[in-house]
Image (cartoon, rainbow, N blue to C red; front, side, top):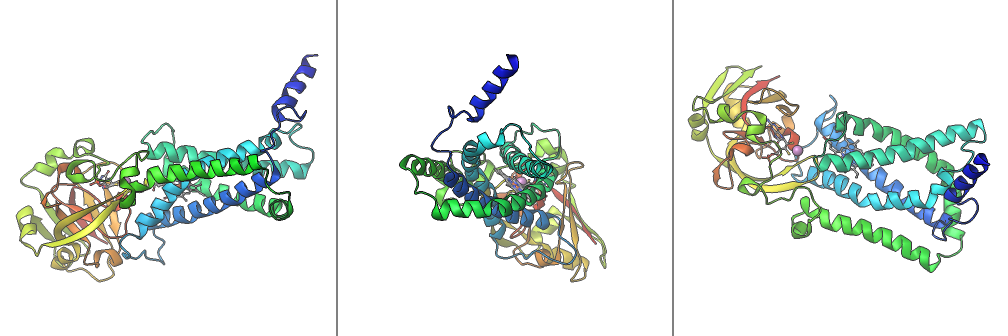
Length: 380
Ligand code: HEM
Ligand SMILES: Nc1nc2c(c(=O)[nH]1)N[C@H]1C(S)=C(S)[C@@H](COP(=O)(O)O)O[C@H]1N2
Ligand SMILES: [Mo]
């Protein structure tokens, strides 16, 4: 009796007895959503890998310093596209969940293998979205390092997606090409899902794309807010550098593989030729804020010390801990005339939270590599 009731409850839940089925759970809707999701995940994978290899360049390839806004576009597409994909994923899961909860779950060994792939696909997709959304909302609810987990899960997700797509493609194609036309309700369902995705995109895209700035009510960070009109991720107090940054004895040291070690005070830096560049801070979290920076060219300072053209430069902060306390600058970036050691922002000395007395700002580079509170350049 108990067993019978459990089986009955399951049947109701999974729609096997026909009570909880919906006309919206057609193959055609599932196929269409699947194709859209595959395109969205493929885009997320490519833009995600770009972000990864920008921060961890393989020895044989160098990321260019132009176009200035390239990373802003790829990472904006990654994060905003990812957010807009959430309703698609939820809708897809809703259309297929009777099949996900099918009983018995496996009927053969081959079936068990494929169930495992579907499990990785659904689990991986949910994991990427949930951790991604929490991360950009500054809610670090998970015990692991987001970036590493998100990076490796993306390979699992894309691998499972390829197996799933290869297996379902014939049926999906049949459903989309030759199936019965969409019932009105079903078309309305897909339009609603697309509308929800579009609404999310419209209310978050302004975090990266200025024309939509005023609509960006759902964006966790809005450009134009914060001291000097630029958002702040780590404050000087939070980084524990306030006293060192304000110390009148602050100086910049250029050392490592140099012809002569150079030590420059703030006044020495101010006496070098001043340059201006309009460049965005482009955070890996998807937001970008344009600003006008003024300072000295990194290449001018490096040439004072005498460095080889193919040298790599490690920019070190006053900060003594944290994963963003240093960043590596490859030749394409330090030789670019727009790459500055900025002393001023928007016509004023840098606010402490923006890196006073001196911060790196370079074109086409993730925010995590725009080191603040610079005090040493180590040539490698
Ligand atoms: C709502 C959806 C998503 C959000 C909000 C999101 C957010 C992010 C963020 C904030 C980063 C930057 C991490 C950092 O550099 O510290 C990132 C990187 C990345 N994302 Fe996503 N993501 C989403 C979906 C996806 C999906 C579906 C995939 C895979 C298909 C993916 C693959 C990647 C990869 C490979 C990286 C590079 C990680 C690294 O630098 O090692 N993301 N994502
Ligand atoms: N030393 C140091 N530099 C840093 C960081 C940091 O935590 N420490 N955060 C980085 C990140 S994640 C971003 S997005 C930019 C933000 O610069 P802003 O606060 O001036 O907008 O600074 C970068 N530079
Ligand atoms: Mo950032």
